[in-house]
Every structure is written in C-alpha cells, then in structure tokens.
Length: 531
Image 1 (spheres, rainbow, N blue to C red):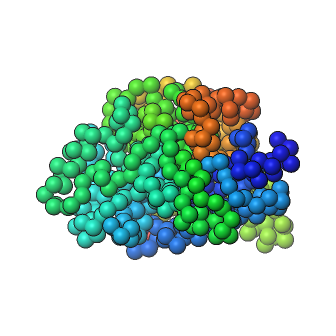
Image 2 (cartoon, one colour; image 1 turned 135 degrees about the vertical axis):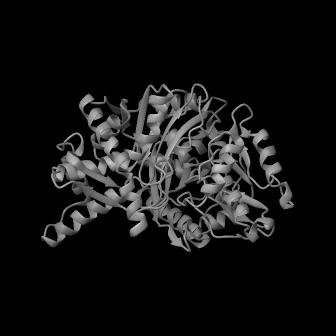
Image 3 (cartoon, rainbow, N blue to C red; image 1 turned 30 degrees about the vertical axis):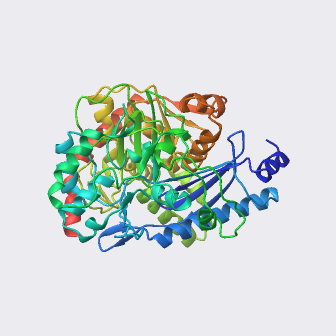
C-alpha cells in the first residue's frame, strides 16, 4: 500500500492497533486494511525481584502502555503526518498466567505475581492430582490456591482475579473478559464448551469450601470469549488512560484480550490442527495444535487452547535468550575496549553464524541459562552457569553453539515428550521471535532439537503485537469465517518463508548434548545451594 493511501486509512479511522506486553518490551503495531504493519511503538521495561517475588508495579504497567502508544503516535506522525483520533479496533495482549487479585473497590491486594515465579509448587502438585490434569506453577489457579495454602489474609477479600492482558482490557473497557487462549492459562478449559471446565471448578470449590470465603469460582474469574466475539469498547476513561494526548476517541471496538501464546499462534498461522510454532525470546514456548487429547498427564506439558478454543499442547520454558544476550553484550564490551565500534546486529550475526562451525555436540562444553527456575527440568531457582571438562574443545564456535543449545535445551526436553513419547503429529514448526532474527541459525538449531522441519516466514520478527492486531482486525472484519480460514485468505495467502529440514548429524549432536545436560543437572542444583 502506498504511503498516501496508508495516511488516508489512518486519518479515516480504518487502521487497527495491537499492543502486547512482553517480558522486556511493550510493543504496539498499527496495521491497515491489508493487515500489513505500517507503524510501531515500543517501551522497554523489566520485572523486579521484590521480597522474593518477580513483579511489575501497576505504575510500570500504565507508564509502559502510555509510553508505548505515544511512541506509536510519533512514528505515525513522522511517517505519514497524521494524528490518530479513531481506530477500527484495538487489541491487548500480554505474557500469560500470573496473578493479579483485586478487592470490591478494585484495589490490588498483593503485588502482581508474574509467570516467572516458581513459588507455587505445593499448590500445583495438589491441583494436578485433584484434576488429573497438569496445573503448572505459573497458572493463576496455582497462585490462588498457594495463597490459600499459605493462609494469606488477602484471599478472603478477593473480588476479581485477572491476567495482565485481562486487567488492562478491563481498565480500558470496563469489561471483565478474557480471550479463551489466555483463559486457558488461568484454569483448565473444556474444549467442548470452550469455557472453564465445570467439573474441575466444582472440585476446586469443594476443596476450599471449609475456608468460608464469600466467593467461588468462576465468579472471580473473567468471562471467556473466543476470537471474533465482541469484548467491549474503549471507554472515555480508557481512551484517556491509553492516549495521554487526549486525541483518541472513545467507542472503539476491542477484541478479547489474549496471551502471548495465542498471539504467537496467530502471527505464525499456527491455529489449525497439526500446526505448531516455537516462540523464542526472553522465555520460550513450543506449541502443537492437537488432533486428540494426550494419553498421559505430563507435568512438563501445559494444555492450553488456541484463541478459538482448540486444544494445544505447550512446553513452556522460563529462560531462553537472556543469558545468550548477556554473553553477546560481553563481546560488545570487549570490542569497544579494543577500540572497535561493532554494530550490534552484525555482532549477533557473526557470533551466531560462528556457532554453525562448532562440533555437533559442542565439544564437551555445557551451559545452563537459568536466570530463574525451570519446572520442566525441576530446578526451582536460577544460576546461569557455563562449564566444561579440561579436555573439552574450548573454541568460540563451540562456546556460541553451547549457548544456542542451552536456549532450546529445556524446550527439547518438553517437546520430546510430545513428539517422541506421545507420537504427536506436526506437519511443520514455525519459528518466530528474537532467536530467529539471524537468518538460518536459530532455525537450524531448532530443527536439530526437535528433529522436525522448521519454517521462518519473512514476518517472523513481527511477533505478538502483530498477532493481537490481527485478532483485533478479525473481530471487526472476520465476516463469520473461522480464524484459520480468515488468516489463510487475508494474511498469509502470499506469505514468503524458508523451511529448513533437520540435518541428521545435527540431530544426533543435540541428542548427545542433551543426554550430558540432563545427567549434569546436579551441577546447577549445587550452584543454587552454594551461590
């Protein structure tokens, strides 16, 4: 679409905006009627460890949202000379899970407990046994029940429990709703009803009946909505919260708020059965839309849904590229100390490509990238750790390859349960996120880890903000088509991408590496105990 037509669509209120709260960045994406990103905004932020809890403050949330939207406005003004007054639709997405609990006066009762916390092990174990359904530590219900087990005073005062996306949407629209994909990270979903599982709800309410609370599930949870369903409109209050300039009008339709898993599925066209995707950034998750339920309950595997309510198996990993990025920053510091000003993008490219020259099993080098705990590998805290044997082949290529392997090692452990143990069929895995920005490198490492073809589209870097923008566009332009059909016809019909087949030698090398990785996990435990 030509620049003057883009400007006209924005001026006419036909553009759509999606905003996603990631772990380290809040990003806004503006798309036009062709569903192509035309402008963006961003805001950097970081969670804090306070009193043993990973959290963001409410001030952080609103300062970040407003800063991100203001940055989008600047980009629109700089590119097209237009001020946004109205939009066709808006969507809000955020990292899934966690715990935001409010009382009847809408006051936050305890600091936001994010997905990154691994403090609900007792609750998660008990609920998994009660439901015969895996309840990960990150899930909202695990946080709620752990607070009950801890005897926390605030529980009796709860009126509403939300995820981050549902909270922001509530404040902007007044509606206590949630996209079913995000809802599936709060509590198990019955895919027949595409709502919270009624039998499990009854079991939970029976479990806590003797506590005497004046609330019961699902009354304190948001209402589940499927992609395309009406989720409310931007209120006057919401417009002022989002756009501090005061130019944005109220009344704009908003789609159901979704989690980052759902927006990743949409952004990679992975919402149909036998499609899968891996999102690899600060955290990492691999997902496959299932043909049928799994035969066993796996603590390592989450069962969530697509934004349309179809069952998805997900291996969620807390740590992916943070440690890898930290090492690249060390090389950046070294370059500057040597008087060399290296472009950061080129530095990533050179180091990543160097990894492809390394030994397939990393030559005896071993890396644990744990900034925080990893439930899949049963590690409760994080200590980034690099180690090697005296006779290991300590080269730059092996060093970088080990860090790339580390970014995907826990994912491989989880996904092997699906692809090898359960025989789950997936026609192709789509890769997206920061790990895949350097062409061919992260893609080939993932193909080796999963022994599965991996495709990266030219849009792979767009990520979740684009995904939630597409869900917002679908909500007002879907015309009754299924989400999968609409995406195929209106977004990905002419999408370009490249597929890499797994190299058998790389697969064998990663398998050898992961065997050593799992055997040596006590090293990480020792580091936690002594550092």
